[in-house]
Amino acid sequence: MFTGLVEGQGFVRRLEPQGDALRLDIETPDDFTGLAIGDSVAINGCCLTVIELAGPIAAFQAGTETLSKTNLGRIQVGDRVNLERSLRADGRLGGHIVQGHVDGVGEVAEINRDGEWVTMWFRLPPQLAKFLVPKGSVAVDGISLTVVNADPDKFSVALIPHTLEVTTLGTRAVGDVVNLETDILGKYVERLLSARFGDSR
Image (cartoon, rainbow, N blue to C red; front, top):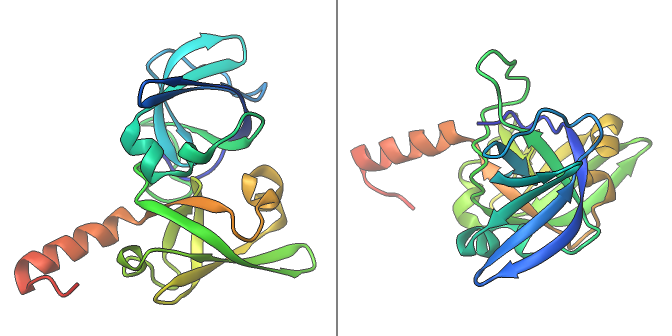
């Protein structure tokens, strides 16, 4: 699992279609050390496995399901991506519990600047909106964020200068597609309540 605290940004250096799958060669930051083949890495919040290492280049494979339900299917050579290694058992859970299992994609709807701070709004599918609550957690492109406003079709987050500097959100524009993972605790509660009282969706 992950925490949603991005450790660095990588660059897509090569994309190689492999049937219905895609190989991604990502150039990792200098301090992104200790990777081994078989390790799990969250790329824009999507958990992928290291299949090959060559210096700073780490290779991954994304299958049909991943490409169709995340923004990795839209990625281009030269794009920047958020990177986070999986959490060690003795590590600190500084963000929130992030599985790296993207629920769906959203779209940047508004970017409102107030000095160095930014309030960013995202549109999201209705089936995901029910899992968001004000002051709750959400992962956007793998970044652990606190929900400010939660509407039926969109939500907002407040971004500090540090987050804008060290993640891809600092370069996002209106209309960009982002990966969304809602809080696993909310999904379990919804499933249990639906089983007990019926599905109200």
